Image (cartoon, rainbow, N blue to C red; front, side, top):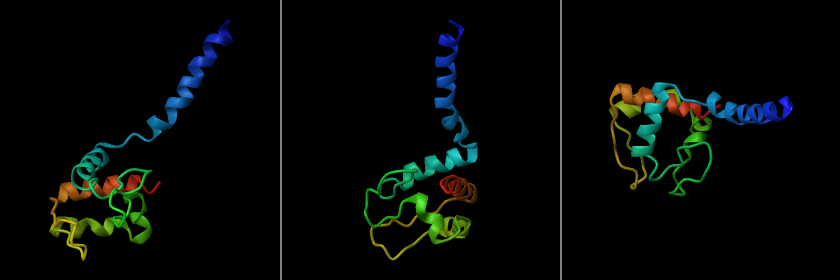
Length: 108
């Protein structure tokens, strides 16, 4: 009888463990909110899924192009690209660091 009650509890813990291990720190959580609010219209901002706009790279792949920490200055000064559909936007330094913290979680 003891095994019958222990196994479901153990199974529930094993299922929940990966989600707990992936919990974001507060800065990365703010960064995810910034990404969802400002970027998700065109970019895939999570670990899976295609970007809504085919030409917009998924955020989980940005670190393959360049170190995401290199984005700090561009985010703070205003990102402009050669893509006419990408709006110019500017983040304050704390917002830029939060977005970078979130992008770094996607590298793992």
